[in-house]
Structures are given as structure tokens and as C-alpha cells.
Image 1 (cartoon, rainbow, N blue to C red):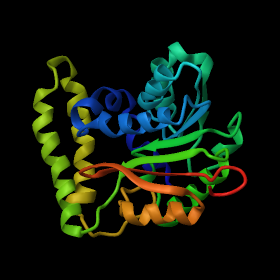
Image 2 (image 1 turned 90 degrees about the horizontal axis):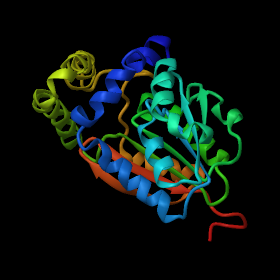
Image 3 (image 1 turned 180 degrees about the vertical axis):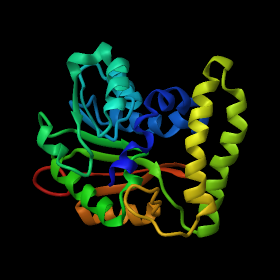
Image 4 (image 1 turned 135 degrees about the vertical axis):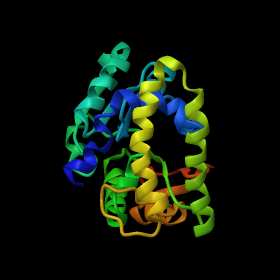
Length: 257
């Protein structure tokens, strides 16, 4: 991933933190589904968030699971600053790892985690990069641990996929008008960047992609890659338009039960 790709959103950390609720459709829907799955397994000991951004998901985990610890992993110092402010009430339970998730973040983990999660980050890797990362997540997890990826993914058919892209464009056009007046400067900055997303993914649909772009492989293919990496109980846990929540479990010690 080139430096310019890494910085595509990094200088927008404050903006993204404030605008996600307004301009990303059902932003909390899939996060909350994954959080419920995490808690259904019992309170997790250590949760890693890859591409953790401003720390919105980790804040939910730490609030809902008072004994949990978390590892924030991201390449952006700007997001590190914003996440540090958001997660300050839980500072003694968070480890910050400033590292791209396609590099050796595993070396900084304090222990094997019960869960590794990611949201809207892994789609910047190409297919081989995604497959390699899924294998590394499998290796890093403790036996019985879960991996969840909430991300922009294509669906089964190209026409349906293009419709999901158009849905997000329409949502932003509608929702930006409902942003409170005091937050409109953030909305304008976010939408200026979103114009680039539209050029790359809607107007340039079908064009060549490289790591760092929005590379939307299908959720079906990515579930197969999880299975190939060794995960069991692989499933599509939730889906809304462009976003899918997929995941799987590392078999417990002694077998795949």
C-alpha cells in the first residue's frame, strides 16, 4: 500500500469520527451484531481491532465488557490521536499499535487474542493480500478464538453490486442535508473525499485496481478464503447493501469439534 493510499483518510480522522453516524448507512448495525456475537461467547479477554481508526468499535467492546482488554492497530497517527481521546476512559485496558495491518502487527500483541475484528479496512488489500491476512489472523488467535470482518464487499451478481454502490451515493446525497449546521464543515470535507470514492468505484467501475484502492471482492469468495485459512463455523453473519459481516472460528485445541 503506497503512502498516498494510507493517507487517503488519515488526515480526515476527526472528520470521519464525526461523520460516520450521518454518512455511512446503518453504521452501527453490523458493529452491534458483531459485538453481540462476541458477548455471546462470554466476556472476551483480549480483542484486536485491525484498521481501528477512531476507536468507535473498541469503545463499544470496552464499555460492554468491563474485564476485556483491547489492541488498537492502525497505520494513521492522526487516527491514533483521535482514538486516544475517545478511549481515554479505558486507557489502562488499551494497547495502541501504530502499524499497517499488512505488516507485522502480531509481534506487538501482549497475548493471543480471543477475537480479532476489523471494519471497513481490509478491502484496501488485493485478493492475495486479503488471503495472507486471514491466514495471519488465524495463526495469531488463541484456539477457539473468532475472527470477524465487517467490510465493503461485492455480492453475488454484478448488477446487484453496482446497485449497492449507487445506494451509498444516494444515501450521502440525502443524509448530508441532515447534518447539524455546526458540523457542516466536516460534512463538506467528508463529501469532498467521497467524490474520489465515486470516481474510483462508480464512474470508474470495472477499471483496474491496485492495493490501496477499494477492492470489493465478494463475500462468498472471502468466506472461502477464511475456510481455506483453517477457520471453521465460517458464515455470513449480517449484510446491508455494500457491507457484509463475515467470520469464522479457529478450532479449539485438540480438533475441530
